[in-house]
Length: 259
Image (cartoon, rainbow, N blue to C red):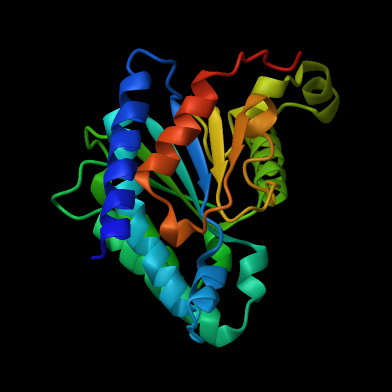
């Protein structure tokens, strides 16, 4: 490592420590959502033709992120791994990506991990083997003492809302509730109780990497009052210092919850 690189690394470490100290006692988000974008562009930027290398490198970053969330006291993390739109990618790329997601689920549910996993999305749209791996990961981590980690796979925000309404209607049909009675009684919270994230707080902070500044259908209902942090860094290059910057940005905001 050259002198300039060593100096840069030393300054980065010092700045990271400074950020961490500044966050002591600061307001910390209870639920963080992460849109992990830029894997393919990262691979192409370093001259790799096979974008699966970018997805694998991005997958390796997830354990680091969850460790940083644990250190910060974040209780719920939602990871946007695969959208419903992504299911239309070329078959070769999609198959490689699904295998990587399966490996992530197996790793995060390993016996040495503390996190509770929840598979979140329209699993029926996934290949049966992928859905089975996600369900097994969820079942095997139920009751663990660590943070709750939502794996959004085959996920679309509009689809989630449609599924919630469908579930709500089915529940009331079983109860014998008439449609006019349901229309009269329906409240916002009744739909929220049927979302994929039911029982969890809405995200306080959503982080998106790669420079894009949109939600891409991520948690459309739940992010009504969320704070957003966008960074130009591609997901495989996302560092603890970038995460701490997001927390610093969040802690400095005055949340007005819709006003």
